[in-house]
Length: 406
Image (tube, rainbow, N blue to C red; front, side, top):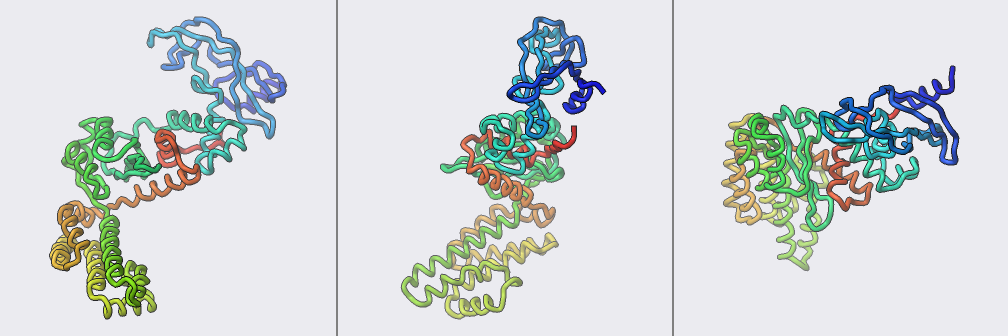
């Protein structure tokens, strides 16, 4: 077997001829060229007429152990009749303006999916900023161009990536379980960019949108996809009830400050927040003490549990009945946090009942937010929203990388 044949098998790049090789201080340099004779436009890959030849340049390829492997070629420039411009020719092993082969970039992106950028720089011997640029190119190359088509059920949420209220809006497809769109900012203006991108026809095909109770997202959906059913996640509603309960507890502690009873109520936070069926014998004893010593706090606990039971109903009519009863009870409870919560639930009752009917939550979006937060913590934060959005799409946008395959 000839040496050039061996090198071609080692390089493992389609549509390539190996012409020779050379050892240098930087590693093994392999001279290659495309299999086609007429140059092709790097933009549309249409065959064009040769214009001139650029100086030979190098592309970093996957290494052979500790030996670095480089591909060397003098790219031609061609005049494309379709584009009407003169561009550097298309080559099969790399994208324009990149000093790395596609295989090397995909290995880099795969490592970024599972570890931090600093570790990737040590493994591959490249600069930290270069890793971010490679991630952006791989996302542009691998992201499904049809991801915004045929959307029926989506989830919307914001992700805080930096202090001083820096947010990224994330849109998730519930059917494909992946992120389909991201944008810097939050609220109505950010989500309207998504609707503008998919167009009016795709907006009319949307059936369900899950979200929290953010007013901006709701207005954007009502203005651009009025036929879509807005679903408010039950866990957001229960969290509001838990926050109201905790607010009542803190208010009572402040009123009883300095007394022995204040210390007991202060220590009752976790027994109060637990679900009734998950309460241990020790916590049940604590709840009995709360019932005996603080009637308003125990009333707040009963309100929290009643709301949770109402949201657990499977029959829509039963859930509606219990929620109306709960709203009246909370409005008469003489507990200001629950009176506010009753007004909030009454205002968003249709979206809450839609959850009972469809049993669709925003848990998928929250899970993706958790993964994104892990990536942000692993990188010790992001200064740029674009870098974070590229990472979110790389890890949660349905991009599958397998550097072991050619």
